[in-house]
Amino acid sequence: MKKQLTGALRLSAVITGLVIAGHAMAADQPRELNLGILGGQNATQQIGDNQCVKQFMDKELNVDTKLRNSSDYSGVIQGLIGGKVDLVLSMSPSSYASVYMNDPKAVDIVGIAVDDKDQSRGYHSVVIVKADSPYKTIEDLKGKSFGFADPDSTSGYLIPNHEFKQKLGGTSDNKYNNFFSSVTFSGGHEQDILGVLNGQFAGAVTWASMVGDYNDGYTAGAFNRLIRMDHPDLMKQIRIIWTSPLIPNGPILVSNKLPADFKAKVVDAVKKLDKEDHGCFVKAMGGTQHIGPASVADFQQIIDMKRELVSAR
Image (cartoon, rainbow, N blue to C red; front, side, top):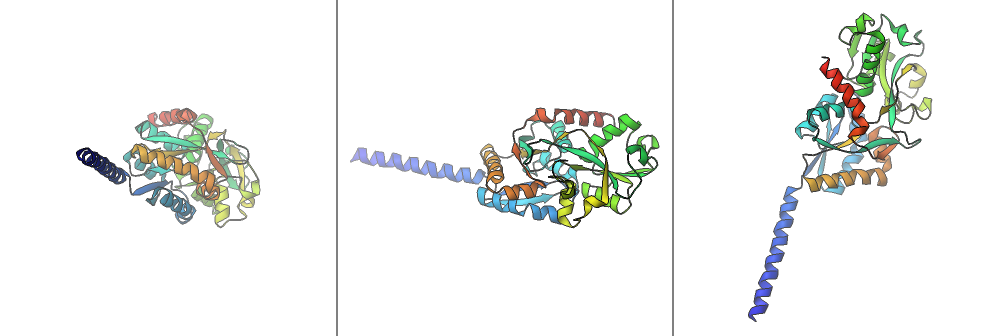
């Protein structure tokens, strides 16, 4: 009888321990997931495009997913560095470089966006002008107004700035030795396109995959999103006069400030979203893309260019 009682007490202790451990683990799991969304585009549409992500993550992780839509790229950068943003599905490579330069261990790369159509892992910065304008080359924009997107945008500043410095000399601060009459940061890709259409800029930069149908705005990019929003004839209204070399697509990032077990669940959930609700993933990414493997090495050239830009200031 004594042995049975002792055994029962031991079993009870084990069960109690498991229950306590279970409660502790549940207490450790965050109740919120903060999804960072880069600014520079129509906020209402961006939030709408990510509502399905929120619903998926809420159900999959038993959390309340907060959509943290920043007015500019810097807000998401600082959010990742400070632990206020947990996940970014579509990060600018240049913005990732800013995070990495501040703290190489701040985030992990979940993967890179890969085009569904041709499996390409990159996109292009493009300079656009109005279709009915006389401008055919960058040189034709001498003495004209020019628009960049955001200082932390890759295609909207880092890459074309590098090109202009080599080709024209100077910096954006002195309008590349006064080649342009004005150089303005509009705040985002959408604003750059609209700035060209309304005459604010003679030329401006934006991004596109350059894969797929031109009239559809290609498979991914700012044209594609704006066409879906309210500009169905956009590609008839603009002309591309410069295209950059291939830029690596943005990384999908998860914060290392999350508890390790929960972070692993977040990574699994993102990959599950891509596979099981690909339409939602495509909507959030702003193009027909899926997740491919990636590492810091894929973005080393961008990191080096960002370091050079920062050190020159």
